[in-house]
Amino acid sequence: MGEVYRARDTKLNREVAIKILPAAFAQDTERMARFQREAQVLAALNHPNIAQIYGMEESSLATGLVMEFVPGEDLHGPLPNANSDNLEKALARESCLDTRLMQRHCPVE
Image (tube, rainbow, N blue to C red; front, side, top):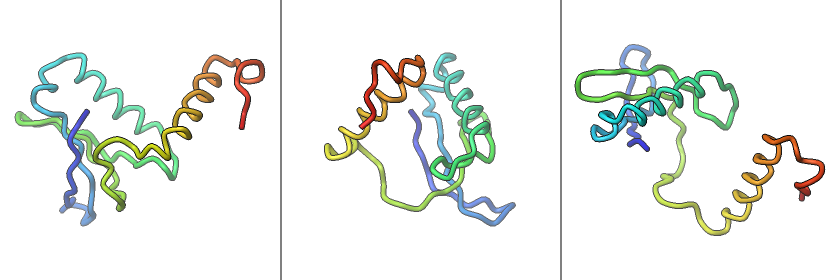
């Protein structure tokens, strides 16, 4: 939903990732609300596999999330097919956990 850029936080002297909401989306109140909820959810989470959020910045030109920079491969595009089965299984399990039907309806592999 956003464009992510590598940047330098000059105040704290560290690399960060900045996720910018495209201008066309920034005019859409529903998308803007979703972007703000994303920031709130990230702020509430603390897990080694989830990038930390450092802040949300707004200007007349753009709105962006300032996040932990995580080095690695570019994830541009869809996941490879080899990982899609694992993703589908994980999403199915998560759905069952959400509805508390894990024991009856979701066999764990």
